[in-house]
Amino acid sequence: MSETRILIACEKSQAVTIEFRKLGFTAFSCDTQDCSGGHPEWHIKGDVLSIIDDDWDMMAVFPPCTYLSNVGNGWFNEERYREAARIRKQKRIEAFIFFMMLWHSGIKHICIENPVGYVNSHFRKPDQITHPWYFGDNHMKKTCLWLKNLPPLKYDLSDKTEPEPLYQHQNGVKKGQNVHYTESLGFSKDRANLRSRTFPGIAKAMAQQWGAYLKEVTC
Image 1 (tube, rainbow, N blue to C red):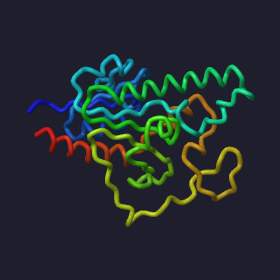
Image 2 (cartoon, rainbow, N blue to C red):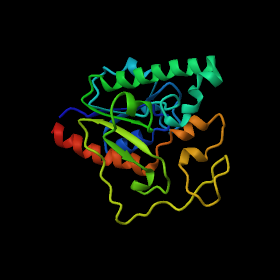
Image 3 (cartoon, helix red, strand yellow):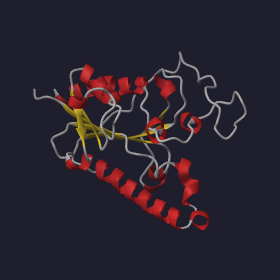
Image 4 (cartoon, rainbow, N blue to C red):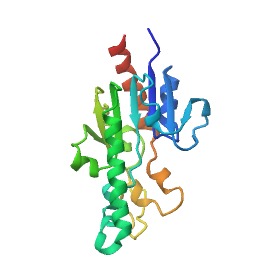
């Protein structure tokens, strides 16, 4: 049987790539930035669209959510932000086109991750919505998964409870109130990377569950 080739696109951290590699899969991360996961030999630096036709069996994508997430909707107000808002709207359209090009690639098994936002209302609802705490990480971060020829991830909440309050909102949410992981982040040069963080539990679940599924359907 030929090797199973897995592309983890828009992934600088290599969190998911490393989990697939642990299970013996030929997995590569791809991003326009250098990787930060410690394995440059498993990283393809560049535009994912330039390698998308290179015989991949599966692709998981974590595209930038800056212009697609509902969190930034206020910045699209043209009356208030004028040309800056118009530019932002154009970037949102470009981000959505990128999402759809990935979705309509020739790769058979696909997962695309993003927050609730523009994709939900202009494409379709996601196949699954998760939080990191579903998979053992004590964080709230609502995450949508659009799946093509992949099963939803399984999890058991019977032995888990919603996370204890971890953060205080930068704008002064009442102390002790639980807020979304991304709402807790201040503005910094690393905000985008922190906001797109893939937590260890879901990275491991993706590799273990979808890896087992790929073995079943390709053997």
